[in-house]
Image (cartoon, rainbow, N blue to C red; front, side, top):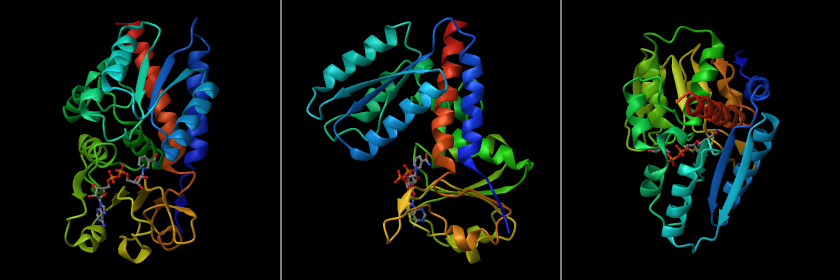
Length: 281
Ligand code: NAD
C-alpha cells in the first residue's frame, strides 16, 4: 500500500507561506492573466488561479479578449504590461485561438515577468540549471511533490511519459538537474512496458485516461500523475489507474487533489519570486 501525496494540503501550506510573505509588503504583488476567446476549461483554470491568488495576498487581474481580436492589439497589451512597474507576473492563458502565433506572443513577455516559464530565455536557463530560471509551474509542482517524499533523487531511473513544452520537457530537465537518469517517452515510443518496469520514478503526463496500470509499474516506484482526463463515465481521472497502482507504488498522487492544486500554488510562488526579483533588480 502506498503513501498518497495530498497535493491539495501541500498546496494550501504553500499558499499560507506566500501569504505570510506578501503580508509584509507595502503593496501586493500583481499578476495579470490574458485570456483570449471562450475556451471553457481555460475559464475555469483562470478563475481558480484568481481565487488562489487572493488567498495568497497576490492581486490577480484578468484581461479578456475576443477570439477575433487583432494580434497587434494583444502584442501592444503585452508591451504595456512589460513596462508597467506595478505588474510583476504576466500569463497568456493557453491554448490561444488558432489565428494567434502563441510562440511569438510568449517570447514577447518580459522574461522577468514570465511566471509561466514559457519564454525561450527561461527554458534555456532551466536547461543550464541556472537558479534564475522560471520553471513552468506544473514541472515545479512535480518536483515539489517528489521533494515531499524525502527520497534522494540522485541516480534514480526516472521515466517521464509525455514531451510537451508545458510539462514533459521541463520535468525531464529538472529531474536531470537533480542527477536522475531520465528517459522521456512519447506517443511514438516503443516498449513503454519495459521502460516502466525499470523506472524508480514515473511522471505520467500523456493525457491518456488510466493508461498506466498497477501491474506495469516497478514495485516501490514513486508515481506522480499529471494527467487530468475524463474516464468513460465522465469522472475526472489521471493517466494512472490509481486503484491498481496504489498497491504497487511507494508514493502516489491522486487525481483530483494531486498535481492540479500544486500547479496553481507553484504559479503563485513563481509570482512571488518575480516580485522579489524585480524589487531587488
Ligand atoms: P500534450 O497533449 O501537449 O502532450 C501529451 C504528450 O503525451 C505528448 O508529448 C505525447 O507524445 C505523449 N503521449 C500521448 N499518448 C501517449 C502514449 N500512448 N504513450 C506515451 N506518450 C504519449 O499534453 P500536456 O499539456 O503535456 O498535458 C498532459 C496531461 O497533463 C493532460 O492530461 C493535461 O490535462 C494534464 N495537465 C495537467 C496539469 C496539472 O496542473 N495537473 C497541467 C498541465 C497539463
